[in-house]
Image 1: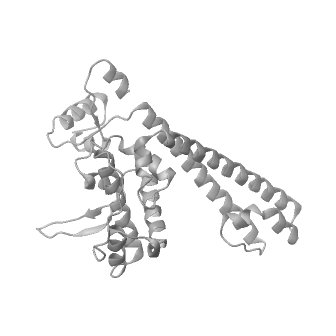
Image 2 (image 1 turned 135 degrees about the horizontal axis):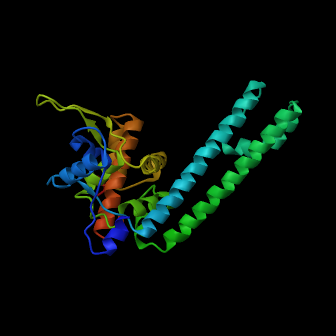
Image 3 (image 1 turned 120 degrees about the vertical axis):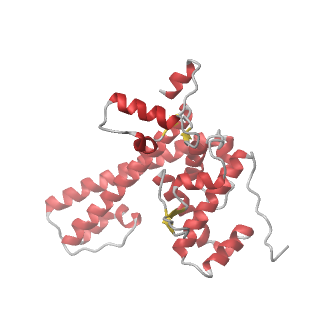
Length: 281
């Protein structure tokens, strides 16, 4: 809709609904909603949402479908584990065991109807895995033609799926005033509950795209798992943080840093460069 209206020469400004809600004066109807939108849009400090392009929306749809398949695969795996556990069969967690489920079923006497149900779930699991692989290949093909995505791939710990989602969310990055604004939009900065001149910072806000936040945290954890082989200022900063904070806190902080690095690379048209360690300089 925003692109259609913009094609007629209008300047389109999108406002998040929860920013409009405080301006609704009474019961909800079309006239009250229109008045609230006009009131919110007239505020000089109002934050607007930049409309996404067709390619961005298409890529985001692809990521949402992949995420739905991943969730469905996890549910299917948990269901198989639950059914087997009810009959006293405990399997290790992981896809490797599920893939060889037929051989596991042959080793244990189970009711024929239960075996049929498990075989159907196993077939559904394989179907979902194939769909996920197909989507990931499509993401990689689209990423190969995206210069922004190729630059984001140079960030340590970032893979094709995360780079593609970052590129589709960021665009040119100019809708964010600074790198912290982008990190805040993903929900990787602390929530604030301050009063009486006393600052009180809580856990991360968890706003914005849950999938992107999850992927960034996973990238941070992947970076931390290979920290002994990493070098540069980010690696030194991570080691210093791990010396005094819990690994989960460090993972969220590192994810926020990766988001800020991604914004800086997109807005400044740069490639990630591993800066030398301070101790080795």
